[in-house]
Image (tube, rainbow, N blue to C red; front, side, top):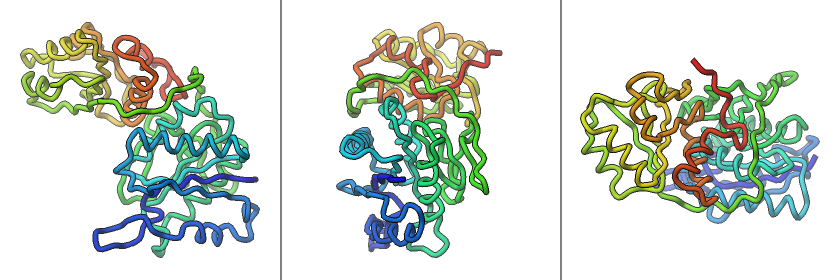
Length: 336
């Protein structure tokens, strides 16, 4: 029943300071008291990464630090499961990133955190940590998942939807893997995807995320894309529509793609499947070579682009992989 916990920082272990909440709680003692007398008492090891961070400061290098800690402890003494304690702000980005890089990992990894610090009366820290530990030792969880607010979600299908609610994460395009109760209610996990053998480490790449809004001009879009990034995630309307009547806007996107930069079109809707060309408003950029993110969340899309760039993919090759499932991050096209 052994579990290894990688502690990265985040609200769960924060304390007050003159400049606001910062990491500093004695998480190891708190965890020992929490598990005393349970079947996991004395069976949990803990690593605190250095430095501990607010997850707003997380970057691809932070993802890689977690991955290396997990792989190191798995190689030294494999545990039954692994838990990552993380801040909520970018937790969904990290869980998606881990899912791609750990597709070959043969133990479950569950990421969690809390909306309130562990030292606050009424905090959600204890139920989230014990729930994550329960999932990690359940022999039913697979891959990377995210536990929060009594729900276990696929790590690359989750998104943060509230900064205050104890059920702060949802999985808009996939059902929860499990819901707590007596007993837990489990569902069948989605297909795992192709995996990625021997992934190269994450490195930080220049990926820009642009939200379209009514009235954006071609000149503004060009300015946002100058100098050219390595890849673009364009958050469009509905199923992938852009202001096609705006003079020159689709031409800007075509120029970027012509320069060898992948343009991935995501939806601003939480529940959506991007279908470029379903409407005339999305046809021009589809013909130019933009590709849709299907039903992936923004977090899963962005982390996947960073992962593929870190593997050496660019342009068309990267675009083609966006439609292939590496770790269950997207579902088969529903069509229309």
